[in-house]
Structures are given as C-alpha cells and as structure tokens.
Length: 388
Image (cartoon, rainbow, N blue to C red; front, side, top):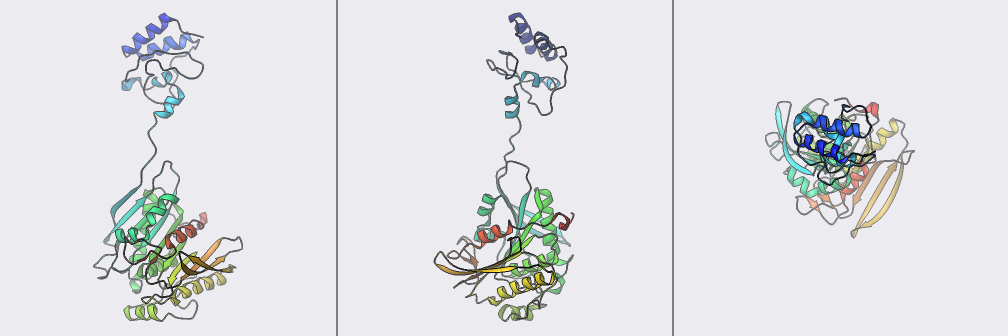
C-alpha cells in the first residue's frame, strides 16, 4: 500500500487548514482502511509528525507538515503519530528529591516537622522512617547529624523528622517519662503515629514498612511508640535510650537513666514483639549502657512469651578502628529480629554521624546504615497493618 502524491498533497492542505478528520480519512482510504473515525488510544500524544519524520509500522506516511493541533483535533492526532513518539510525549515521571518543612496538627497542638522524599521515577510504595531527635535538638540538626537522608536517597526511603514543642518541654525533650504520654491514643505517641500514617497516605508510603528510631529521649520515645503501636511500626531503632515504661516522672527518669532496672520486662508496657535494633556506647555518661542491655532483654522476654524462638549470634568486630560487639538474634527463618551494638569508648552521641549535627560520634560505626539495613528486613503482615 502507498499514498499517491496527489492524495498526500490534499491531506497536507487539509491538515494546514485544520481539517484533520478529512485529512485522516484520505490517508486511511488510501491505505485500504474502511473506517477513518476510530477512537484514539488512551494517553496517545497530541502532536503531528514534523517534516521528514516517518511513522513506524505498516504505513508509509511521510512529509506531513508539523503544526500544533487545536483541542478539537485531539481524538485524531494519534493517527499521525508513531508509537515511539507517543511514549516520548508522555509527561516525565521523574520527581527529584525534596527536604521540606511542614506542620502537623494533633490533639490541639501543631508540631513542625521536616520531610525527606527521595528521588523517584515510578509509583512504587516506599518505606517510611520516623526519626525522633534528642533533647535540645531540632529536625534539621538531627537530619544533618544522622545523615539519614543521604542513605535514604540510596535505599529509596521517606524520612520524617518531627519536632518537640518548646512549650511541651523547655529542653525540647520528648516526654517519655510522663504518664500522659505513655498510652495509646494520647499525647506525643498518638501524634507520632498519626503523623506517620499521614505521610504514608500523602507521599505514597508503604504502610507495612514504617519504622521509628531516635536518640536519647528520642530513643526512649521511639521504644515507647513502637510498643504502643505495633500495628503501625514494623521495627524500632533505639540509640542511647531507655526501655518503654522505665519511668513515670522526672525523678524516676533520672534514676532509670543512671541505674536501670535489672529484671527483664520490668518496665514493659505491652507484650508486642517488635523487631528492635539498639546502639549504645559503653562510655555513655548520660544514659547508662545497661539500658541497651535491658531493652534487648525485654524484647527477648516478649518473644519467649509469644513462643518465638530466637537464636543469638555474637560478633566481635573492629570497625573504623573501634571495637564493636554486635549480637544478632535470628528467628527460625534466619531473619534478624533483634540487634544489639555495643560500641567501645562510645559516648552519648549518634555513632558514625556527621559533624554537621550535634551529639554525633563520626568515628564510630554508622548507626544510620545499620538501622536502615535492619529496618528493610522487617515488614508487617498484611493483616497486622492498621487501616488508616
């Protein structure tokens, strides 16, 4: 099949006049097709071929003068366009990374937070990590110090950094020791869980892969939130923190930080078995390192009560010139469910963090890298995810 010169001239004239239905009819009839009014395929591009461009497929259409088509011609434009050009004309799906300040209202109070969204080029649901800063810190400082955004860009994770209100705590500590913030559906834990759910919904997050981590008071709050919302958070990371329920006021908080309870499960708020990774320096003078041991002991006790068998495996490592004792607890499927990193000479600071932020120990092994590796091995079962 071919189109004669006269037919092509006539089709070109009609195209220049905007009479595209008639032009298309002439071309289709010349190719032996009986119908010239078939509907266009969904999503096809809305431009005609430029001069000299050849269409792909069985047609020999060529030399149709390029022009922008009026809206009334949209339904016939794809007939003059090869498939590869239609695909190229689709909107670019790539979205660059962003790190922006937002506000979130909950329980009559509005919290500022920072939100990191990695670059993405498709609609896959992404893991979400909630990061809780320590006392005197804010979201930007904690993001800089942990360098979690850089790792999240590589691993494809959304990261949320809520900020404590100065009016809620003059040192901007999370109130993990206050009974009004130790129950599901109340106070700061409720806000953190609601914020995580909001980000999942708005930013195409994966509700089965939401995690929470924190440093010091943020670590203590992370441990508490994970216990209160095991249907929201698939795992928790606690750096230099204390177990959930370890204190009920300021005096008992200071006691817990310096002399933690030795009895496994003494401060447990629930029997929820939440995968947990703990980092603690053995030279921490602010929160006693025994708190890290207590966190793991309580997690093991909860697993035992739930008939979950965990096998510990100890590793003595030298990383960046530092001695590290790493204990991994695997389930029968060899999935790591607990990890305990004890850092020799480690202080009350984020291990392996950046000097761009406060309370960091750049010479230590990267807590951020270890946590994100651990988190991505955990996922809530579909029937365990809270509907939002």
